[in-house]
Image 1 (cartoon, helix red, strand yellow):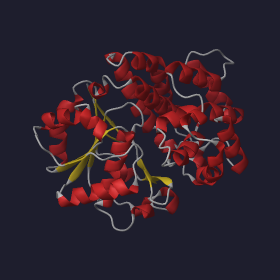
Image 2 (tube, rainbow, N blue to C red):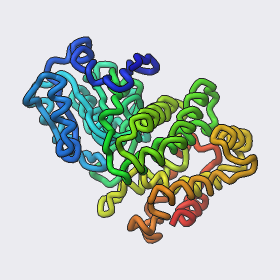
Image 3 (cartoon, one colour):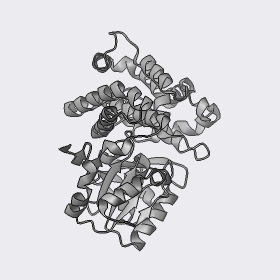
Length: 375
């Protein structure tokens, strides 16, 4: 186990969960609200955390949906206030950790949640007085445990990012034991989400060599271990590297993301389909890699070299083949998303905060082309 101090305090490795009580005490959290979902509870992970805390019955909100919604956030904020909580534990995948951040924000800040969205100029409105959050990931995907943002589907149908350094959890407890036995398709989808983070942050145009190095190393770890982790959910070594890769992708978020997320955010807001975020990232990534290739020559060469690919190998083909081997859908159509949705998705993708940091400029025609290629 290691103690890492980068962006936030991170307890990482097998046995990290044993530090939870001490970390809560150090933050002065005496009445945490655990924000999680029904799946995590059914898997016994909620009870395992409560046992580590020495608590048989803690205040719990376990109604986190697959894509966190404003309705769920308001319900959880009500529970937080009613229970007189003084901090949040986000226990689960990115959805639960993101919702915990929004609860911590909404419980300490006035006004509608939408005013804190990035595209509404919300970042300066988020202050340091936000309630403390401890994040415990149960998947190796979003890296939300060290991320400065949370994504929420608002009542008006928009799926928007809320961004601020104050949203970074005060402590991340990253214990790969919490991911042992994760189902194969969820392992694959969350793992490809993490790979998308590493690749997009690496090729984002901002100059940040440390973040580049972290993202590149994370991509190498994920590619080397994702198939092992998917085939054998009890592979402890593979799970350790996958959790590290996911964390590293989010460590580099400060560089910005790109078109993969600009597309997947509005697509993920389709409530009647409710598609998985990581699966969306995996499906649209090949088309985005083709689109960006003309302006990412040196970065693509470094990626190919690091991943052990041939000098002129096509990264888009590599990712598409990896998706196929992992059993992920071949395109949006297989996920229940047809081109009749594209007209509403295009303007939302262009407005998304991640579009601005794509290495190649996006416009309506290029976004539509990417959606068509991902069909």
